[in-house]
Amino acid sequence: MKNIKYLSILFGFIAFIACNEPEDVLIGTNIEPEAVVELPALTAGSANFATFVSLGNSLTAGFSDGTLFKASQEKSFPSILAQQFSLLGGGSFSQPLMNDNFGGLALGGNRLPGFNPRLVTTGGAPLGLESVIGPVTVTTDIALNNPTGPFNNMGVPGARSFHLLAPGYGNIGNLSAGLANPYFVRMTGTTPNASIIELSMAQSPTFFTLWAGNNDVLGYATSGGDGTSPITDKPTFDFAISTLITTLTSSGAKGVVANIPYVTDIPHFTTVPHNPVPLDAGTAAFLNSASAYGAYNAGIQSLVGVPPVNLTQEEADSRMINFTAGEGNAVVIMDESLSNMTIYSPALLSMRQATANDLLVLTASSFIGTEAVPGNSATVNGVAIPLADKWVLTPEEQLEIKTAVDEFNATIEAAANSAGLAFVDANALLSQLATTGIASDNFILTSNLVTGGAFSLDGVHLTSRGYAMAANEFMKAIDATYGSNFEASGNLVDIGTYPTNYSPLLP
Image (cartoon, rainbow, N blue to C red):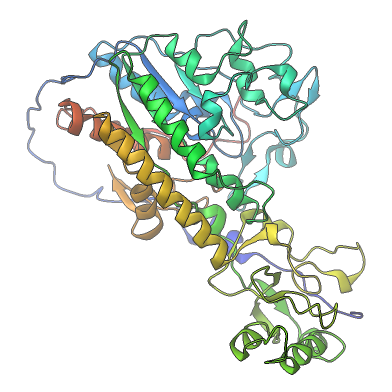
């Protein structure tokens, strides 16, 4: 293609934030005072909170805004639980705190690629911290200044279910082979080959939480289902969950287990619209011409019913690529589920325009509209060049994810029930955030990026307020199973005291 006059894509779906929508909605502030009701004294029921250990991944660690940092860790849901457990004899709760509130990791003075400082907002779209305040020095160095355990919070960002059982997952010598996790390297101390479950059990826990499995599907989803991070196979997942719960309860500890949310409910997949492309009349006309997609459309239609593919009319129609002048044009995407028509012509790629049923990953917002060849307007990504698989979840890929989540959740709930453990339906909780929102204290939390109050700026992990909401759900589950009364005694936490975002200047 040549001579494409492309109008810059303005992502109004994020830019509107500063002026159109408040933070999570404050409700019911102008009401008559209620009569004082004396609440019952707090009781633990049959639970023993003396030694509390929490196992899991980034959601357990307190990961937020794209990284782990001190302030987010201090307000992780296990830390919030431990504060409430302390009212009933719970002991100290240690976490492997980062060295600063920048986030990011270094190794021997050099930044680890992919482990960057946190995201921030100045009232609009998420931004990298350094784009707002300038360069920072990442001071958390996994070779130089690791904290000393044991740690009650055994949440390790990036860990899949089976990683919680894996020896050597915290050995710095295994990093280059991809067999270790730098966050866990910080936690193993003098026992680098100890597993997460081993270090947890060494503390003789009397109570635990286990929220694992999210990463067994999340990597596949965030990579657009391109196969670079496959979904964990069910036998491996089932073995991991069974072994974890059997081990954790082997000495009589009680606990709470949570299941996996549908990742398609989170703002990482629901924020970027399928049709963000504005075009002027001339550009739209060129794209529709025989010099551009007009030739593709004609080629596809001419092959309906032609052996050996025998393309259907329905599929041919779904592959038509058309643009109009103005806003709201859909991006062009690759779709591996389409019939392979390159056997007739290399130009007949498996591509189509996105529909409302496709989910674009959040990171696509900064890629759509860029030029594959800088300065060449005929190489605009998402228009002249189709978006690769990694940028979008097609309905077929979404179904793969949902099927896996449903199977994994059946395993988790059955294992929890068999062991007599409390259970948190995190899947239902996050689905409610994505639909009606959740009223808690004087706020309504939703899954909207930046403004909803529940999800942090990375669109995957919770805010501190979201983690407080999760902690309350864990306490409600404990009440229901073990006869405690955190809710009835007024000892759920006030989520309004927990922030939804942190200043770029957070010390």
